[in-house]
Length: 140
Image (cartoon, rainbow, N blue to C red):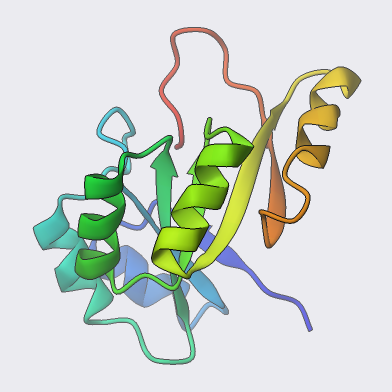
């Protein structure tokens, strides 16, 4: 079975296009520097439109506990996708939240792939992402 996550959804129109288009997961971005950032109010509005067969993923960059809790509540999240989050911090978030953790590993060179191994036993999935050039906002 193929699964597809559509990320950065920020309007009812984009959400309503993604779901019948085959999205098994929808991503809500909780990183203020991202162009896809959602406020908690907007995330709650969009989450209410997501049918039960589609999982809601919260995309965050090394979040603190307050942000994780607020995002879970607002977005009715089932999965946390973590960028730039050390494995020990990801493990703590997983233990505290009880949710699946998807670790995003930024890759530019073969050496960057070694970081994925450090998430063994922590991440339920590893997502390989192009390493963002210095000064660019993550995630998109």
